[in-house]
Every structure is written in C-alpha cells, then in structure tokens.
Length: 175
Ligand SMILES: CC(C)(COP(=O)(O)OP(=O)(O)OC[C@H]1O[C@@H](n2cnc3c(N)ncnc32)[C@H](O)[C@@H]1OP(=O)(O)O)[C@@H](O)C(=O)NCCC(=O)NCCS
Image (cartoon, rainbow, N blue to C red):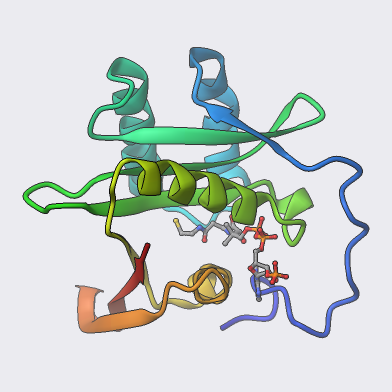
C-alpha cells in the first residue's frame, strides 16, 4: 500500500464539506467530465479508461439496464461516480464495477454517499449481495480501505489473475 495513494488514518481531518454531495442518475452531459475524472490521477490504464467509458456509454444507451451509473455533484460540479449492474445468471447479486471520486474531495464522504444511495436502490429492488473485484496492486490500497470501511470484506483472492504478481481480490457485501 503506497503512502501517496492511501489516505492514512493519521492524516489531519479535512475541512468538512459545506453541503453534502447531491447524488443523481447519469446524464449525457456528464460523459466528458467523467472521462476527465477517469484520467485525472493516472491510476487507470488506457485500456481500463476505455472499458470504464464503455460501461458509461452502456448506461446512457439503456437506463436501468445492464450498467447503471450514479454521479455525485458538489456545488454543481461533478465530484465522482459509481457504476454497477445486475450480475448475469444470478438471483439478486449485483456487481459494483467502478467507483471514482475527484482527488481534491477524497476523504469527505462522497464515495460513501454514492455507495449508500446505490445500496438503498438495490435493497428496494430485492438485491441480496454486491460483489466488487479489484486488483491487489499498491494503487488500489485506498479502494480496499474504503470497501472494508463500507463493510465489503475480502472473500476470495486469486493469485496472479490479472498478470504475474497482480492478484484479483473479491469483496462481498450481503445487503
Ligand atoms: C476509493 C475512493 C473511491 C474513496 O473515495 P472517497 O470519496 O475518498 O471516500 P469517502 O470519503 O466516502 O470514505 C468513506 C469511508 O472510507 C474511508 N476511506 C476512504 N479512503 C480511504 C483511504 N485511502 N484509507 C483509509 N480509509 C479510507 C473513509 O475514512 C471513510 O470512512 P468513515 O466515513 O468511517 O470516516 C477514492 O479514493 C478513489 O476514487 N480512488 C481512486 C479510484 C479507485 O481506486 N476506485 C476503486 C476501484 S474502481
């Protein structure tokens, strides 16, 4: 886990946001700011950015379909998003595919608000559980800390899954 990418518990608390983030469904005008957000801190490879955009385009093309996106706004500006969808061939299992918040607002509860809203919607739909798959590489330390904090414990690790030395970590929450 690298010090640059992970907000340490000992970091001084950030000034609280003056207003909580507004969470709303994706709109076409969000696509360009979402593209910028995905390339902002160079965590994602070009291929990953292109896959993330494909899912966003899927959500725009078919609202309520295979891919769904909620965005967070602070003061009218895009501050983050979460992409999720029903897991094919399961009964009540969903995947959380992607979550990103703007580097300047991290640690302020934006991702918590996005996941809270997503889970609320999924409970209303009768969902049973949400699965997350991530890499165990250093850059994902913040994501692991975040998911554990949101009660998504690790339930499986597949060594060398993505490439040698890059494990797949599965985290699962029962709703
Ligand atoms: C992971 C990520 C989405 C978290 O977003 P965030 O807006 O900073 O998260 P929040 O402020 O809502 O944090 C929610 C909880 O997780 C904890 N948390 C978040 N980041 C943490 C970190 N780096 N280290 C330790 N705990 C962390 C917070 O302390 C908070 O707990 P609390 O409410 O009990 O205090 C953000 O760091 C990010 O976009 N990272 C890059 C993209 C990424 O890795 N996405 C996941 C893979 S697709």
